[in-house]
Amino acid sequence: MQRVGILGSAVVGQTLAQGFKTHGYEVRIGSRTPAKLASFTESSGVPAGTFEAVGGWAELLVLAVQGTGAEAALSLAGAANHRGKIVIDTTNPIAPDPPIDGVLKYFTGPNSSLLEGLQAAFPDTRLVKAFNSVGNARMVNPVYAGGRPTMFFCGNDPEAKATVAEILKQFGWDPADMGTAVAARAIEPLCQLWCIPGFRENHWTHAFKLLWD
Ligand SMILES: NC(=O)c1ccc[n+]([C@@H]2O[C@H](COP(=O)([O-])OP(=O)(O)OC[C@H]3O[C@@H](n4cnc5c(N)ncnc54)[C@H](OP(=O)(O)O)[C@@H]3O)[C@@H](O)[C@H]2O)c1
Image 1 (cartoon, rainbow, N blue to C red):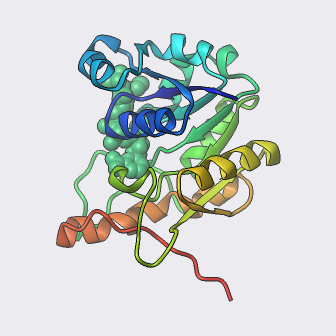
Image 2 (tube, rainbow, N blue to C red; image 1 turned 90 degrees about the vertical axis):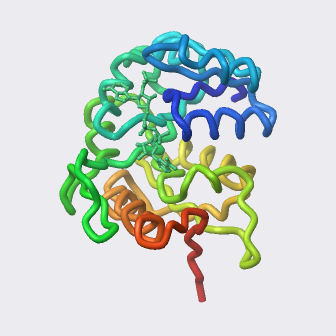
């Protein structure tokens, strides 16, 4: 699997597009308005296209859009285009309200998740949640004095998760498999926790590490 399509034109999409390119993959990046990626394409060498074009071209996809637009973006990419493919879901269900004491508001509840909703809407797509619990500045090849940080991930398809675990290792992470899509109920709120030092102390470069005994 060499052709990676990034669905999302903002900072996460651009960071992971660069990251996959650095790690030797062939990459394209998608947007509803590909023209806005002209300067990114010029500086990175990553071609841009519509969500549909990128969805059809890629062997593996990364979903890096606003949580409120996640289902729409996968619809635009085309269900038939990503049927059977792995989609790494980096999204978080952030509601359009300001944080309270540094805590973001979510549009999901404690017993639901964005990933589960997407998996229900696209049952033949192999969604794996990952990269949602760290800031874009440390997504690719993070370096910490305390060693490799942990990236929690989950999804229903074991083979898809094994592929994503290898990618996470390649990108400098210690992957931690939390189980099926239901685990996104616990993984997505890690973004709320991760953002608290950001909103309260303007600290945006930390990462989680799970210490096993
Ligand atoms: N920022 C971070 O450091 C960070 C870290 C971890 C996880 N995340 C998560 O990663 C995702 C991307 O974050 P971001 O900060 O890069 O960008 P963002 O501003 O959350 O999302 C921008 C992208 O969302 C797309 N989009 C917005 N509404 C849409 C709709 N209704 N239909 C289809 N597409 C829509 C935009 O499409 P167009 O290109 O067409 O405008 C654009 O590509 C978010 O879910 C975020 O929670 C972010």
